[in-house]
Image (cartoon, rainbow, N blue to C red; front, side, top):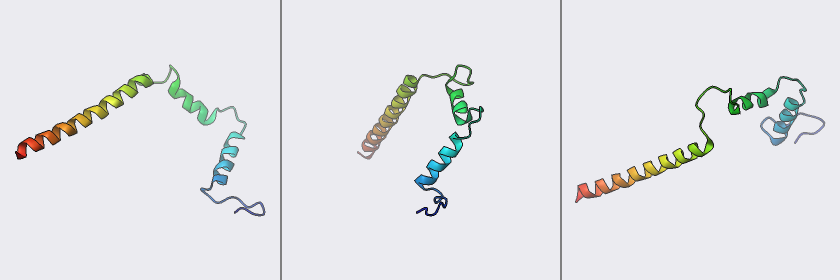
Length: 82
């Protein structure tokens, strides 16, 4: 693959590791991506505050609602043909 100190191919695992090392080796005090990601989980972040449990219950409820609609649609179609 990479011989003689040549750069690894773009998109390879070695290139990804190299980019990751380059980004973290910056040594700057800017915070980088970690600083921006932490903004989503602080109390100061704007937007709706919903706990993960509420999101889980709402998504399962939505899946159940869609499944019930499918069953009702099948039953309606069967009764209409008869």
